[in-house]
Image (cartoon, rainbow, N blue to C red; front, side, top):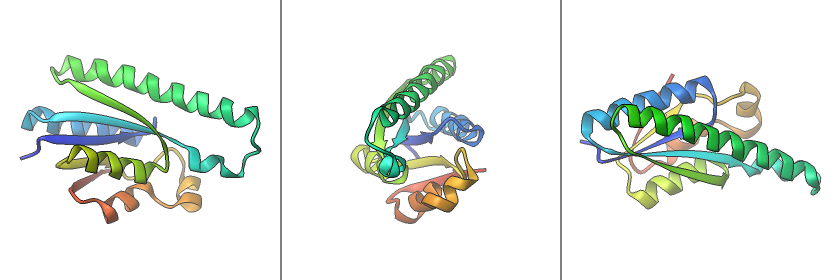
Length: 141
């Protein structure tokens, strides 16, 4: 039923659960699995344009690459190849753009990210994806 699956991760426990669900779906359907991590540069708009922004960006980018390394190893253990995508911008917008670009059949995303405060300040990424997705979207709790 599914041929291309996009799963969004952000380092949170719930996104790890979403990855595991996506891994199971990819295995079940023999689907291509694409993992996306987005450095939320929209959070930087209120920061001064100095080294602070570069340091924060570097830390978040490193977190994404570390997640990619662990996830690739986990997928390989299940016999599934994984394509990783490191993006920057608004997470919901970037997830949707990748899904459209790949013509994905399924997006898997956690119900919430790292912080409840982020939901109040930025809105829910999962709600944005569900509302605007052109393909089936699975929200993992």
